[in-house]
Length: 70
Image (cartoon, rainbow, N blue to C red):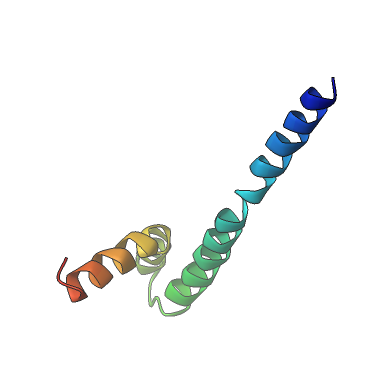
């Protein structure tokens, strides 16, 4: 019985530890959206800015790998 409690506790904490990256991505998304929308001259450029905010991490990694010639 004690083993079951410990394994449940361990699973519980392992699941909780995974959400830190999601929070960082969420803050980055909000920051990028605000930046791109602030610099948009029209509504459609604002929509494009929001779409850019969704994919900026992928573009960042792509440019980093391109820079490192990988």
